Image (tube, rainbow, N blue to C red; front, top):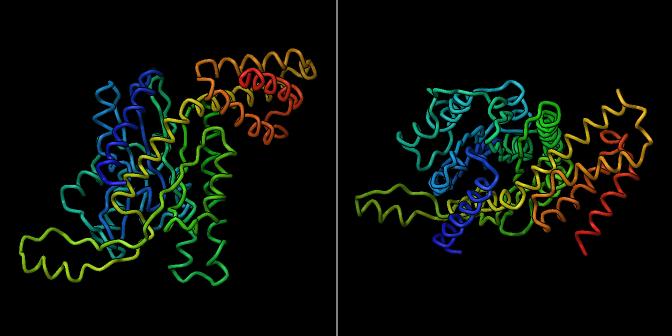
Length: 391
């Protein structure tokens, strides 16, 4: 697909997102990119630009619909394992502190690495340290306002693995050890946010990106299969398919006016290897993100509300209303009313997807989270609803 077609598709997807937000009373869309070097928009061979800023038409399209776009980046190109990400959430790290880390990575410091395409102007625009409303990560992603859509774009699961490979980790830790370590902390972050949704009435959605599909060979599937499985365990999380990456890219060469120099650079501008995306691949990955939000935002919203109501109701039955336990007709009516309340505005296809997700999600968690609603009660109601949808 040519770049102009990618951008044309991006405009189409952004316009659809604006329509969904408008129809659901959203006047402010907050997108927070959290995680590893993909979340930071890093490229070792090609040019650097924060992930969400690469979607160049989103702000303008949303603005035409009266929607304010609020973008934040809590990501680095190194020292970005999921232990660190959970620490950032727990300690409520300020965005200015993340920017200072990025400046150490790109501009000054002993750990400085490749910073292709960065200049003083975009450094000041993308990594400001004097921020008027300098909020912490937890404050940003757990904010809940009536007309706010609060969405986290999370790319992780790779930091510890790459650290062990590139930083002289123990031989026994160079394969799956780092991945397992990252996934424990990744889930800690997801649990933290889901618990906030349940107990503090926040409504944060998470879109969990897969690792780049190198050369389309599915080499990264050993990580992505685990990420898909994890995403299915949470009411507010959806997996985002990665892009097939080329791995071999023409090395970045800055624009030089001198013809002789340019000719010389052209001769030595051979291919380089990179595990990150190039400019067009980042555009396509942004399209995957927006497309996945478009398809799942309303379903996730219903999942969050149903999960919260079922979880708190089951707890209430356990601690305060034990006399209702075993009253199957009452419990079935309650389950049916909740499902209707949060699915009535969805299309029939969205309702089918919601019931499919709910059946697996609720039954997997029922023994620990929803036990007092009754497995048979839930199965009966969900089966009747699915029969009606497939008539």
